[in-house]
Length: 577
Image (cartoon, rainbow, N blue to C red):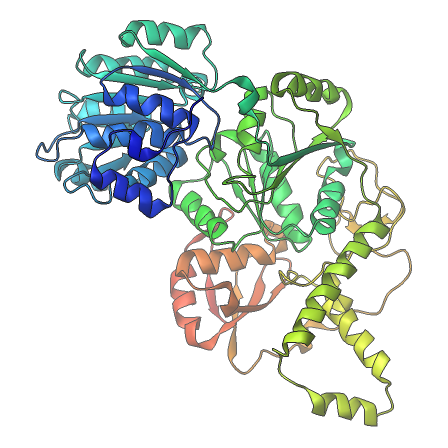
């Protein structure tokens, strides 16, 4: 296909200026094919993968078609999920930045109906919405489609799989017959073909060849692993590759919840994204993920539609997807904008045949990986730690503590012993067994264990317990607890811990019996107050309550905003300890 510049597509000066501001010069293949047809008034049926630029392919002509003087909905864009609707809306806003009078409005379930109503009354001329909420506005008479010039159906295959066919037909029937109709779908099965035949007029097919459906910058690899050992393999791979930003896909909401709890318990910063969460919770999680305040996002396929974060290092298929198209959508979340990325899949038993199906469809060989050993993981952590230590020593950007070192030397300790003790403390030490989460930039410590190692028992209740995992009856009768085979140092008495001078200690009415782990508290504080996680210090989780050290400066605000909020289904009560 001949490559084309945006300047060759006959766009207005305002839209070209916005495109320049975004840093784009050359149109992608889907844009170069679809934009001229849509600018001329034709209908389009497009097939293209996630991350190919298809949003701009229909958004740019939509913006150009709008008459800013007409305060009515002139373009309607339907999306399967609220996340995708938000993503498309953001891109439309960027492209219409210099187009005076062009206003885009996202409408979707979970957001205030009144807020959307105000936007419609103020004259939104481009509406991006989910079928269900669009139908709600149509029933109430708050959204009228009599002036629609262009109707866009993005990811039609997903909308049909979610059961929106009837809603789509009602919406299209309410729009003028002479409108332009645009379909974008990964595949065109018979039901979609029927919609195209019924609601479009002589559409032009715009298709990216199948060989372009994969992401060439993504390294694809799979590991054969028993279901009960997936968590152990996942944490080893995270550590050996020093991964800091990734998405982990599961097929069920329950698996998402279980995996997030296991990861947070082991010191990784993870949060969930699935259909049982309300919009406020989803927005809060995505905001943290985009700002790298979160290492790993664990999600289901439907909830993850519309995730658009450029720096994602890795996508894990913790559960293999049911459809090949879903596999492509998943791995398209990494390796964006020319960056390299990894797609790692876990395969159990006969699922290896699904890998073969994916290879046939994508025409790409997926490499089989060999799980790293405990020794390899420890060596990788040591290398990362030494690199960071060297960089810090070279920069000199640290506060000197000569007086402490001198005191220890005077007491008879040798320099190597002092340095070794400090490194041991940084890498976990006695703190490794405490309830506080491991700091993000500190290498995580793993107990040496026989192969294959499992530090935490898998969620499957009937799974056999590894020989080095004992049952701690005094602590929790039902949950296996990983303990070293050899007796370790005695734990310090938690009651003797002192709160730092610049912090104050809070009491909360939730604890381990309610499934609370330290990261849940940090997430609640940052989510409800908007403050940085740095305002939270040591978190001491007991059976039915917990203590948290927080910044004195923000203590009153944290108490006020957390009181009566919901944390894992429990109403919080917070007060000074």
